[in-house]
Image 1 (tube, rainbow, N blue to C red):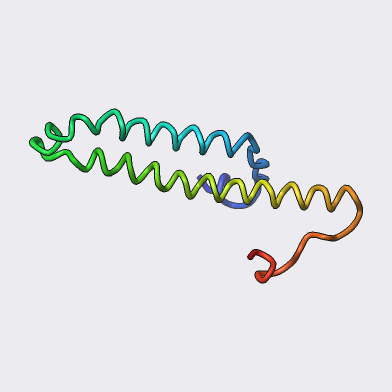
Image 2: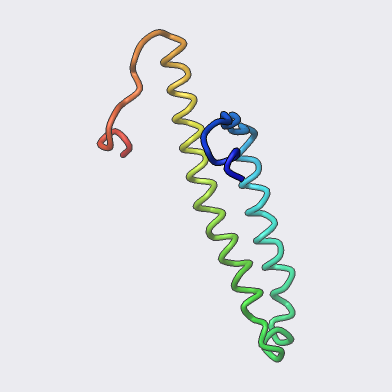
Amino acid sequence: MSRWTSGEREAPEPLEGNVVATVVGGTVIWFTLFLVQLPFYGWFADHGRTWWLWTCLAGGVLGLYGIWFVRRREAGLRRERLARESGTDTAPDGPAASG
């Protein structure tokens, strides 16, 4: 195990895919699961399983935040790439520029 954690091996580059589509797809799945289970609320309540519904709703709501987050990330990466390609440093720096 030490050969994996000793720093002798170089870490692979992170995979970059269509993150926005992945998060949107996951969010749609969570909301769909919530809506499909909603008509069976009485059964879930009788069996003490209403947390299944609320878990799906929470996943959908957190997915909405995730969509907002990854879209901002993609826009920032795009701005940085365009600034690098144009040869100008127009990308804002520091925490004040994030607003």
